[in-house]
Image (cartoon, rainbow, N blue to C red; front, side):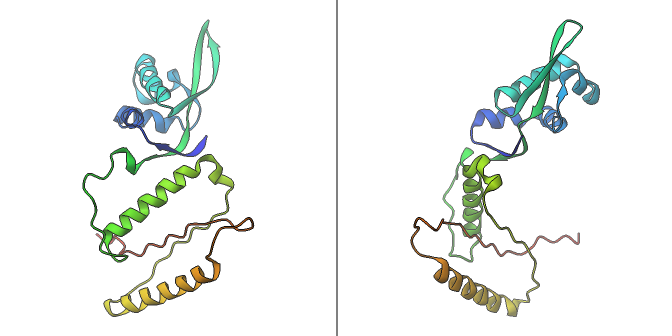
Amino acid sequence: MKDVLYLETLDQAEALLKPMRVDVLRRLAEPRTCTELSGVLGHSPQKIYYHVRKLADAGLVDQVSSRQVRGITEGIYQASARAYWLSPRLIGTLAPRQPTGELGFGYLLNLVEQVQTELADLGADAVDLPSLAVSGEVQLSAADRAAFLTELRGTLEELFTRYGGPVDGDRDPFRIAIAVYPRPDERG
């Protein structure tokens, strides 16, 4: 089972984005037969099989084995991945974003899409690739924001200067993406 399956075609998205199929897919985190799913979801095995086939045809579900039950071969299915991402390229940008420099929301959205696309392009190899992810929270007053961003930019520019330069045989390129944004209000 892959960690992430990146959906890049409308056929894959159409196969997945139906409430019944999402329920089926969630239940297939562990291998199950259509008969087992029918008992859990309260639908006939034939109806479950129809949805499992649509998911399998789109590459979202795998038949991992089969077994004989009263002379009938019953498939055992499992989700192909632990998570499914819809590619931003699937729909595309309907209207060009107007990023207003590094501090604009459009720039942040473009960066997030770029990171998502590059992670998906790494594919199955990403499991063993060296990477680092850091997340934290700071509390900034309106007066502190500019000073914080200036200090963060200076620190990053120093690191980029020290470790930047052309790719050669001994050094691999790594993407560094920093996002600073107001956290959504969770007090509601």
